[in-house]
Image (cartoon, rainbow, N blue to C red; front, side):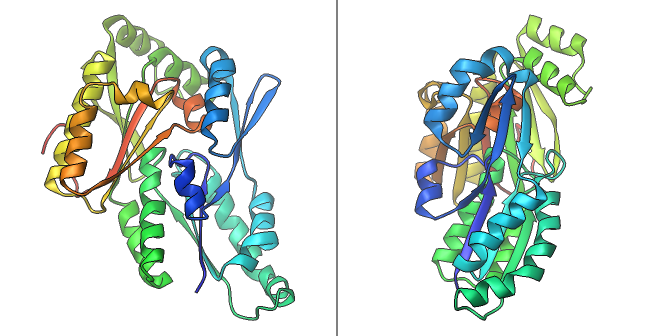
Length: 315
């Protein structure tokens, strides 16, 4: 059976992995003033756009995901011909309409694929499963990596589906932003008043950085640490301890809102890489998606992995 994998462009995975495993992208368009860029997970284009626009005006950007009709057309024009079963894994539905759009599109896809497949000489059924990753950025990356691994191992779709749904409820994404004013202004643009001006000003004045956790569709602070480098070190060292304690998949995903060498120079990074090498954990590093950067700002760092329930800072 030919199994296809689809993610949206907010999923932080290296482009070479996406291409090697023929993962289809649901792109998100980013508009800043009169400039528009379609986010196809192109690292060079993202960094160029970052230098040109995001640092100055990104908080006012508009992100436009694929519509129901665009998702339907992508499947009916291509994917229902190329594959027999497709897993579409989206950013958490609590932060984006992509999951709901894909769910709505799936009804039209499943009702309309037969004639298209028959014209291509295939009269067998087509199946589609839309899965809410319940996470974002590097946390979203854990599911497609596992799906590709299981597909390559010859697992049948039912087992893959069960495994992905289990992992979605046990995946953690930890994020540290650099600029709380940016987070506050971006939140206000989107109508989210959860970050007040006072808390942003106080945090900036004291150089306090929150550690934000994405888990089961919820995103919120789990720690506050003085200084970005100190916060990054605590995050990396905590992730290294989680690796040593045992993960649910042999995968850690990292992303950074800028050049990756900046992330690699942060304290604690080497300890995490050493722990992953010791425990045979594969590490995926990518420049944060353009979509991610306009939402959390330049220089943010994210670590994602699947693990048993735990609290940040504890083994």
